[in-house]
Amino acid sequence: MLNIGGLNQGVVIDHIKAGNAMKIYEYLQLDKADVCVAIIKNAKSNKMGKKDIIKIEGPISVDLDMLGVMDPDITVNIIDEDRIVEKRHLHLPESVTGIIRCKNPRCITSIEQELIHKFKLTDAENGVYRCVYCEQAFRRN
Amino acid sequence: MKHIISPLDLTVNEMTELLELAEDIIKEPKKYSSSCQGKKLATLFYEPSTRTRLSFEAAMLNLGGSILGFSSADSSSAAKGESVADTIRVISSYADICAMRHPKEGAPLVASQYSSIPVINAGDGGHNHPTQTFTDLLTIKSLKGRLSNVTVGFCGDLMFGRTVHSLINAMVRYDNVSFVLISPNELKIPDYLRKEVLDAGNITYREVKNLDEVISELDILYMTRVQKERFFNEADYVRLKDTYILDAKKMELAKKDMLVLHPLPRVNEIAVEVDKDPRAVYFKQAEYGVYVRMALILKMLELA
Ligand SMILES: [Zn+2]
Image (cartoon, rainbow over all chains, first blue to last red; front, top):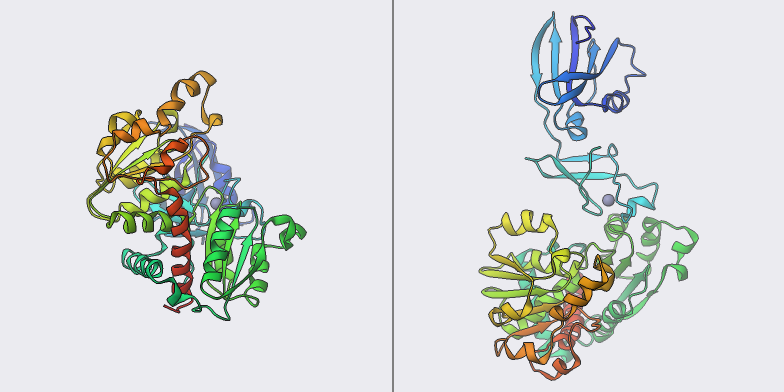
């Protein structure tokens, strides 16, 4: 595997579905953050075949739980002094407001632009979120 | 103040109270003829649905109240691009309660978030239509005498039929209710309903293709329309369509006290000859729709 070098202190977001790294990068607004970031695309994975990884140097102050909403397979490791000090368990939030969007063309959110898209966790085991307006399940792709 | 957006917005107890009130209205409609004097119902219909709108309006008029509203999007401010939120804020100062029909799913929920008067969902696209479900429950409760210990057959288009999904969701809350789901393969109930409601709730149900084979087991037969457009090919439609048409011959196989329900309008899925059978209660069902809406308006305005 391509070696990006060790991380002294920071966060490793691993097991990102291959192709999704940029979406996560954008959500975390890493383009605006003054930190060193490595994006590894299409890394080999025993579990997933291919995966993406993001390594971020230094502390970041975003809600990492949201990553689980976007991609439930993601794992997050917190690194300090070259060691994994915490394998962060992503806790799926009960509701998600203004981050993911309903794609149902029959939903009221499809015609009223100013409505804030809101989802509720309806099946915690499978990580299913449904739009509060039309109840359509959120599709990750 | 409470809004009614989904059929499950009422608890089982609240549903019992609603149906009891509706049954009292059936018995003594005069007693309620001026209960809503001075109150106004706004019917905000962003798409035409004459049947539902008239049922709401008849309900309010029967209670001595008055009505105002619009019956299609082009006669309303929506045509000028006003949002549901703004419309309801304005209507809130004109009326005491409102019923909203909208082609987009979730529109009545949006309205309820900005409204200062109770909002009733009168149908939002293919999503929810709670007063239809309440009508069905009142019909069964009132004519069968119970909502538990019944075998309910649903026949026809079970995939796209919103009324079927809602009634299944509402009936699983009662004891010992089982379902026989009668449809062609293409029109079986959606997966989520099978898994998340029936299987998850340990409900007894069977999926079959032929009405003849099972009609004798049913206490309730809920008919729906099978639309030609839903079939993959013409040949299948021709081959199957008679299976899902209820006629006098099939009625001979049914229990003497089975009830036949249908949300109306009917096209050809129930032969006209069945209308005179006392077990055919679909016109009575439409009448009960007015009573259950009367009861709902009274409850939501806290007048009963
Ligand atoms: Zn939606």
